[in-house]
Image (cartoon, rainbow, N blue to C red; front, side, top):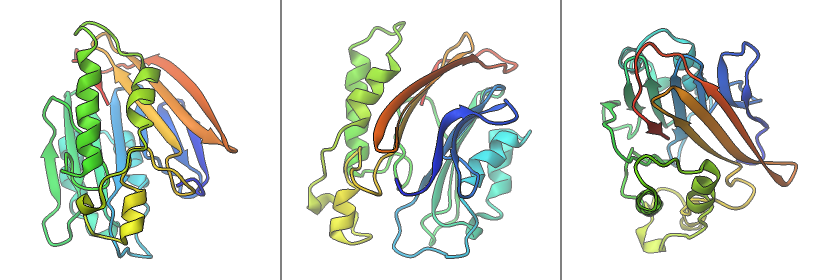
Length: 245
């Protein structure tokens, strides 16, 4: 949402959290810590929302500041998910090397708490790995990009963003989920969303088994697109598998 004031990726005041920041409510949509905790969030597309709901951007921040494992945090959070509008939350703790997915939608079903297994996953504004056209398109394109590199080769993060996240191809209107108005859904059906409420930040985060991490962001500020890369080392207590988000 281009109209909402945000800060691009950077280290926060305490020097422990790295990520973007919502300047309205103070939360984040994607951030990590030096200890190897990562969390990111998407809103769920829905027609009606709660006007007095708690800020969803606070959820990743709460996990990053917590000492609980991903699983413990998820089980605690389900007790209060009804206080938020629709969200999808991913939590990753490299100390335990476990990733969890939490969602409070659809309303008609119990909250989802699911451990995310190794592999390629895509999260949009519906369930994890939903059959939405742009989800399927992004997953296919990511597999194609991976196939052009050897297993021990690093994929340049700028290339990852340029080849995957700038795709403006819209879905056929017959494939849309029919939740909101047809024109609104059609505008949101591309990976890169144009317009005032469109894409304003594209981030690639990689963490290797030698604990080397890299955060690359392409973002819009005052009508211009900028890029930045921040490299650092995580300090988890166990060895890591390579993870790309």
